[in-house]
Length: 423
Image (cartoon, rainbow, N blue to C red; front, side):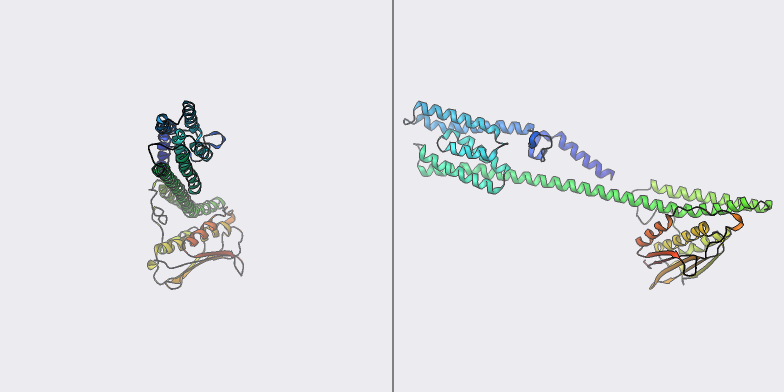
């Protein structure tokens, strides 16, 4: 997640650093930094606006030059044309706010005053950049009509009407085509930016989901490992506490078991915490430490027996070593949690563990105990968090199996799970 976030931050920082080189429609497409819903002009916008005003003024002067040499144009009319042309160029400063209205007004003025032709062309270009095709086509058609009317009302004495019409049409179509190209390029850039932002958000969500799954995996692993060890410690310590008449040899033996169990618990805790320092690309199914399989069930049952529990274990799998590691690990954790819960909630009761199955039927595991009786030797029951069975159900579901637990038909408690035999 950190690399994706760094890349996204770097991209945004680069966009902000060179935002003055972008048009406001691209640098601030939502207009978030402007008043009244309008984007604030960037340095590039100011340069383009000034250039557009200069181009409109030059084109207006070129259009006014034939009028100067026309003997039918009086000095007052020529002066009025110059004033109208200057006002039209000045009005271009509002082209970003009212592009369509300005283009329509300048098209009407151009029909009777040729010096405003440059301003009209810039306004038509603005419409093509900022408005959809239908609006652009309507404004472009009005500009073409304005050009044809101007060729009739204020004809150029050096050109025929057909020549004037062709030149005027080309002059109108050129900014329309250029403006539509600029608009399509901006839309492409905005769509690519939106895709990049969406991809960045999806990457962040994936990374967050992966972190959450890693935390849940580590939490399940810590519970599976430590709950078993600590429950053994509690059983031994409770027996030692309530056996005041125990001989020194028995006390020493139990103390040795407690020391060994505590050492083993610390060792397994270090291994689990080591997962936190493992590379983030590790396989989610491999928690980064040696994992028990079905062949380790004998040792697990023997540990419970050494703690004083009466465990009846039936292994009905022909070859436990042939069971896939992931399937055997899930069954091991189910049995481990069942034995741990029996020590917590039914101390002194006999626990029955049955594991059976085949590649065709999958593996079925049952851990049951009769109704709870008084704690053996007066030792208090070990408290539980109630989260173990929830984690087991999630683990079984991830393995493609299922887990059931609840009161047994004849009393007591039964934990039953089924895991598919998957290689």
